[in-house]
Length: 118
Image 1 (cartoon, rainbow, N blue to C red):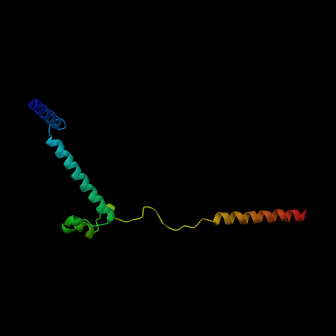
Image 2: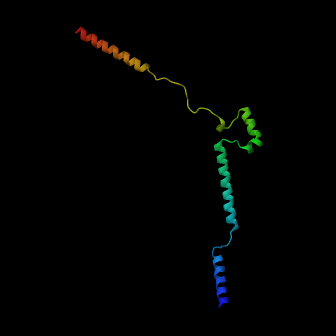
Image 3: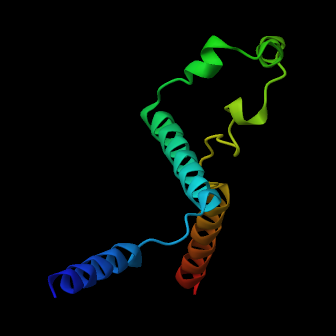
């Protein structure tokens, strides 16, 4: 009876141990790991840019053709700081307003003179 009970316990424990185990898919596991590493690399790059830390990989291994273009003056558009609008300070054009005020005063004076003449 004890042996039957022990064998039954062993079978049940073995079946419960096997219940959570599925077929291991190494390709899926590798894909998860590579996606995680890529996300971590992207996050580190974003944090580096946000903190304003220079990219040491580019600093230690400069692109000499890019540096040459910058020295000669052929610079990429993203590095050029130029205004996109015309920032000339313009005052309001008050000449038309002054002309209209003069004309109104003149007309008003003429009406006043006509009233006095009558």
